Structures are given as C-alpha cells and as structure tokens.
Image (tube, rainbow, N blue to C red):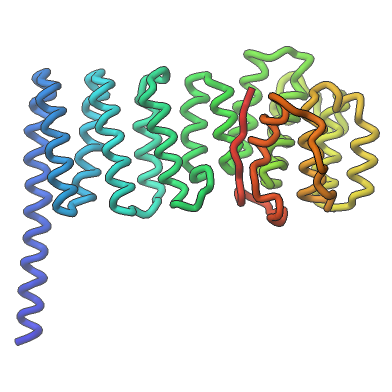
Length: 328
C-alpha cells in the first residue's frame, strides 16, 4: 500500500510539474504575441506581475527563465529599458533563491550584458550586481569565468581599458594577451609596445596569479608584430619581465634585488613599476612591507586599490584574495 501511495504521489508531482511548464509556455506565448504586436508597455507590466507572483509561490526557476527569455525578446525589439529591467529581475531571482553559480547562468548573464547599451547606467548597475552574486558571498570580486566573458564582450566593443580590467580578474592570460596586442597596435605608440604587457604582468603578479602572468607575457611577445622573436628581446623592459617571471618561480631575494637594481632605467619609465615591485617582493620573496608608502594622493590610492587588503595571506597562484584594480 505504501509503495502504491508513493508511486501515485510521484505521478501527481510529475503531472503538476508538466502542468506548470505548460502553463509557463502558454503565458510566454501570449507575452511574445503582445511584444510582436508592439504592445511593449503592457507586455512589460505583465512580465513584472508574473515575476512577483512566481517568486511569492517559490517558483524561482520559472521566474528567472521567464525574465531571461523576456529580456532577450525586448532586446530583439530594441526595447532597451524594458529589457534592462527584466535583466535586473533575473539577478533578483538568483539572489533570493540562493542559486548555485553554474557556467550556464554565467553565460546567460554575460549574454544580457552584451546586449545592453554600452553607455547606459543600467549596464553599470547590472554588471556590479552580477559580479557580486557570482562571488557567492565570498567577498571576492566576482567569478573569474564571468570576468572573462565580460572582458571578451568589451574587447569586441573596443573598450580596451574595461576589457583589460576584467581580463586581470579572470584566468584567461591568452585572451588578455590577444586583446593587448590589438590595443597596442590600434591605440598605442610603437615605442610603448613593451609597456602594455609589462603593466599587465606586474598587476597579475600583484593579484598572485603567476600562471596568467606567464601566459600573457609569452603570448603577447610571440604575437605582437612589432616585437622581434625572443628571449632575449631588443627592449630591455621585456628582458626584465622575462627574468622577473623566472625569479618569481625561484623565490630567491638576491636575484630579485639585483634584477630590480640593474633595470632601474627601464623601470623609471612608469612611476608605478617600483610600487608594484614592492608588493611583488612582499608576496613572492618575503620582503617586509614598507612602513609608509613613498607615494600619496592619486598614485597611493591607485596602488591601495590594486593591492587591497589581505597582506597576511600567503602568496598563492591564482585568484585568491583578489582586490580591485583601478585602471587609468
């Protein structure tokens, strides 16, 4: 008897689930028809009503999927405001339901981001909230996969500065290098080809991401049309970065110290280089932190935002204890 009752309950549950899916599909069909007829305001209000109804009933997945499909539909009809509003409701459903971070969800968020007007304030709010959700409450700066997807979209839009920021918080050193090659070739001076990659390597190292630092350097120097095959390289700064990456692997303070002394003329090309190297010395070579920074004002703020807190953490390869980076 108990087994029969359980089987019946399972059948009822299955029927209810199928009925729910069918109901959602019917509603979605009606909403789509309204949008196709140009009844944008009415359709938008109905989407919102259904969202709050589903959420109050605990139907978080249905609410999220309906808002996501609705956002894509509005984007396809150039209804940016309505689409952005439903996109924020997608995030709200993720936050309230404590949904687990998956590649599919990250790709959906990145898709919505890619369709938003690059100059809209809604896009800024969306990406900030999406990154916060993707960190899973860990206090990190967002999931590396989401950062990578955002970086690629911004690269396609030729927003190289923002793209570089997100690549730095991903683990895609190769993608970052390819973007930097294009950035340097299209926007930079030929005399600064070495500086584009040097800054990226130093900042990856400050974020304790040795593997991406190495990959970005190797890929950039191999693919940049203005860099002759090396090592050794024609540009002293590239030779310094090459030796630095080797020194980081070895961990010997004397090597690091001599290296920084020998290449001071190249390192003086950007006043931030020695500040980054101070931090790298702390992370990888056991150098004690300075009591006071030699820079104040804007440069000090830039460095503090890059380095963040967590100075007591061990130097680890990867994304641990990432901290914000201000890009100029």
